[in-house]
Length: 190
Length: 190
Image 1 (cartoon, rainbow over the protein chains, first blue to last red):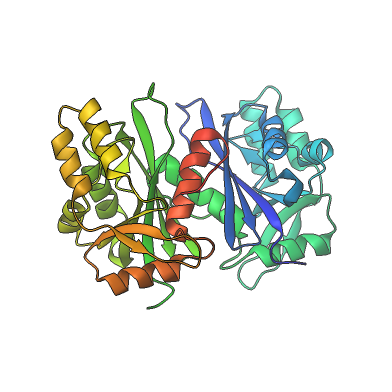
Image 2 (spheres, helix red, strand yellow):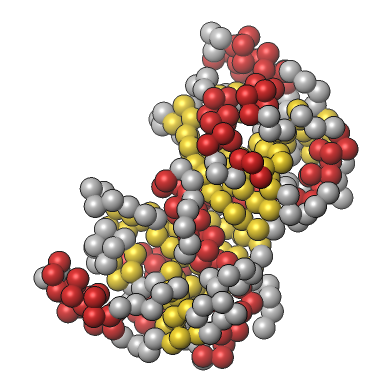
């Protein structure tokens, strides 16, 4: 696999619950090395349009035909605004994966959804869909779901785009931008 | 000079004159390769506080002690909100340079200042201060001013931080972020 493949990394900005929207940042990188473009959008906090927003972000970028994969920092943006990666893949044809540093606690998530959302079952169904894979790295493992790729392809894409630590550069850089524009200085890890 | 030196690149976001403020983005990079942090602030369009804003951005970042130099995309942010790089250097101790792709037309600038600003002389004095250096590159030349550095050091800093084209990565990346968060997709060149 060429190290120069184009990857779209996506993360959302931190927010407080007094706000209505959270910023969503996309970055197009060649492998893990060269930033080509920055995309921005927003989602309603705890809303239901994150799938549509990500689909639109992928469809509208002038880098669309060059992109090989999209990587999301987790399956939710702006709280519990859930991204249905299968729907995004069907609509765009672009393979997509979610990456998290910590193993999601699905029982906790289900409980939170039940407590806060009348449509909790619809959100839960998307979050719970698909197989969560534990991927070993030289450091801690990461947890991923993917669509439109084989497991070996997924691992290779993560491998070519990770420079330091365990998070691929496009996701790490999207996180730095999203937190930096919101808080004045970026902080924490994707 | 080590390729891993920390450089702060700064650019402002595009704006329309119906807006009052323009976003200012700072990025901390190791050489031209690795993004470490994203900073954000804002300046009043055609205001007079850009020097104070840049001084504060440098002073407040937790990367301050690692930084070797700041690079600005030109001498103005948010229209004609002029950055006095000598004042920033005196206040922060951090060497600083301005970089432009095109040779500034100082007569045009002076005319625009005279037309639009009662305090045009104060702005002009800052813009006109110091020597503009034409720096050859493998492509087109760039135009710089600097303070706190020698000319050979300045050239070396530009050299180690430029990957493609003529604009050092920290400035190029700051430009991509500033335009991407404002317009939905980054465009154009720093």
